[in-house]
Image (cartoon, rainbow, N blue to C red; front, side, top):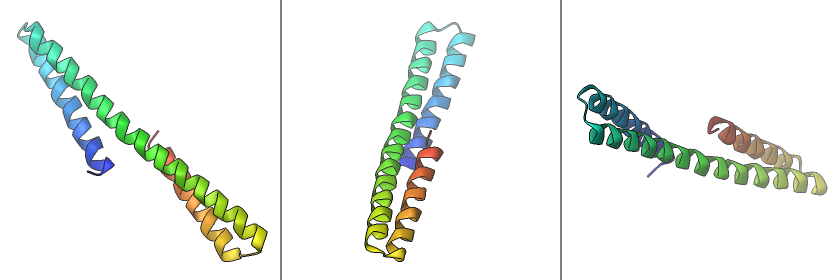
Amino acid sequence: MSNGTERVKGKAEEIKGAVKATVGNVVHNEQLEAEGHADQVEGQARQNRAKTEERVKGTGEELKGETKDAVGGLIGDDHMKAEGKAEAQKGKARQNVNK
């Protein structure tokens, strides 16, 4: 399952929990309210897991790109150097999007 899908499912679970907690509060049902709060927390955790996985992936891309850039510089391969810089930027962008 993609991380985008996990983030959407997590957000849906968080919203469902908020609704459930509100209904529980309105009808004075403490159990329903508590279940709602638990669903909210689980939804937030699911979103955070997906974001963390993407940040780790971005870090790997960044390191790979920086290595490729350095090797390209050492051997005088401008094409490899440019590819490395592009990969490193892609990795940084992935990390920034998933803060």
